[in-house]
Amino acid sequence: MSTELDLSRRPAKTAETGPVNLSGLSLVKLRERMEELGIDKKKAKMRAKQISHWMHNFGVTDFDGMTNIAKDMRAKLEQNHIVARPEITEHKVSVDGTQKWLSKFGPGIEAESVFIPDVARSGALCVSSQVGCTLSCTFCHTGTQKMVRNLTAQEIVAQVLVARDTLQEWPTPSENRKLTNIVFMGMGEPLYNLDNVVEAIDTISDCEGISIGRRRITVSTAGVAPKIPELGARTNAMLAISLHATNDDLRDEIVPINKKYNLECLFDAIRSYPDLSNSKRVTFEYVMLKGVNDSLSEAVDLIKLLKGMPAKINLIPFNEWPGSPYKCSDWETIEAFAEVLNRAGLSAPIRTPRGRDIFAACGQLKSESVKKRASEALKEKLAKKEDPAG
Ligand code: SAH
Image (cartoon, rainbow, N blue to C red; front, side, top):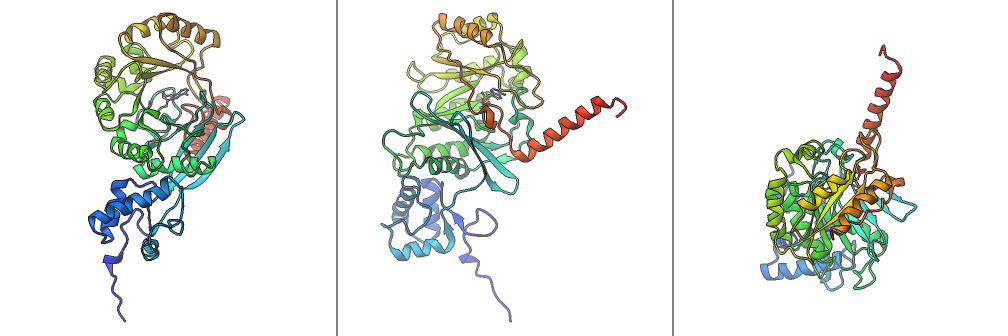
């Protein structure tokens, strides 16, 4: 007996086998999927909108709940599709209310997301755009993890859906939300994954779905200068720059992408970011590293550098991680640094470290599997020190 495979019935693949997950897909992708199912163009657009509304406004995770879609259509969808969340391999809640999720998107593909509640009566979700990072900033834990791969737009959106599930914020609340803001400040460099970040922002900001406005979405970059104006033009999101140094010599060392795009080049790009104004300012992140970038003369240099730019500064106390080569500046030093900036009329709040106990603070994110290897390496190093013959 011979059997023939009917390839025409094979679902479009996200994984090699199995049904296609629609959860987190953009309207464009959903419409394409509907057209692939043989639905005519006009209807496909409408179906895509309906399904997106159920998934991203109501948070449903099965087709049964999609009550305004005819039963036979639902049955047809069910044959080859699912509405699924990623597997959560870790979920931790800090004593300060910060929460961290590790989502598994495939074998060895894990990314972290962190929810930081109560920031001025709002809550921000910090999402990852890549698994690992290519940048190797010397103070960043994620930077010691090898680049694994870009996350897809669907995987970026999934991080928001997972947080909404835990926070029980379905359907999308119109007021008194816990999750109000999204920051692309997790693992990875968003501007090295710009197409997927743009698509994810389209879905996250869709007012009939997750509905988090573009002004409440911030994308942080270490300084991929040529992509900065493009980010603005394609997303209208808020821009944050991981600055951390006021001169090229130091920035070359601690944020090595500076060797490719130096401060002059970076600031030219920032000035081309669309619609900058006092109500749409650029955030400059500045991590406080003891004895490295925290002198008062550097605060003065920072003022000069930001002259004429609609800017606010976020001073981030350095979060230490096992084996980190820096210490956090003393609290008095950070306050004195902030004071110099404030006196020059610059807004420079000191970011309270959140979620340190669950290893969820800035720059501490790193997938568990690699974390173990790093700690093993550290143990070996220490063992060698104890045994000089070794
Ligand atoms: N690659 C992007 C997105 C990551 S954002 C970027 O660099 O902007 C993560 C933020 O946390 C960046 O500002 C980064 O510089 C900062 N950071 C990294 N390690 C840190 C640490 N150990 N302590 C405090 N902040 C850190």
